[in-house]
Amino acid sequence: MPPEVGLTATLSLTVSDDDTAVALGSGTVPVLGTPRVVALCEEATVAAISSSLGDGQTTVGSKISLEHLAPTPVGGVVEASAVLEKVEGRRLTFTVKVSDERSLLAAGRIVRIAVDEDTFVARAQGDG
Image (cartoon, rainbow, N blue to C red; front, side, top):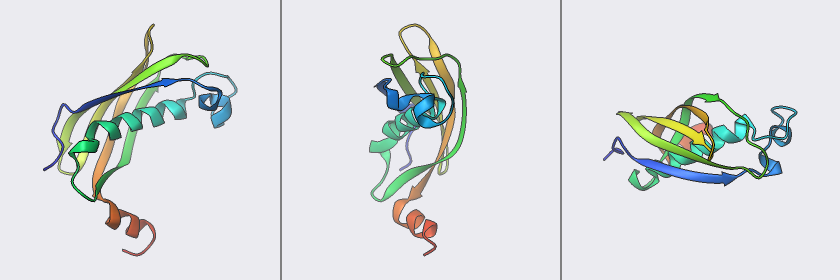
């Protein structure tokens, strides 16, 4: 049975030096880097559906559209949330957002595709 619309998850992160644009190679400022924002949002999508997948099933990222709206300094605490908005066969579309106690920091959509993990890995390795 496929995951159902409305599944949600929220994760928090205290920004460390390792999460900054400088550390991630995506800029020269010591604030939460966009690649880490994207990764945190993806983590939230995975958490939202993790208990709804069958044995041997996983999801893989397919499309990300995210607007990073405001900076967060080292030591800041952010929350990322994901809500499963649409299920079209194996295609799962999530609305994601990241915020702190002051404002919305990022918002967008992530599409993930449900796959059989063993088959997917075998194809990636050229075995399928």
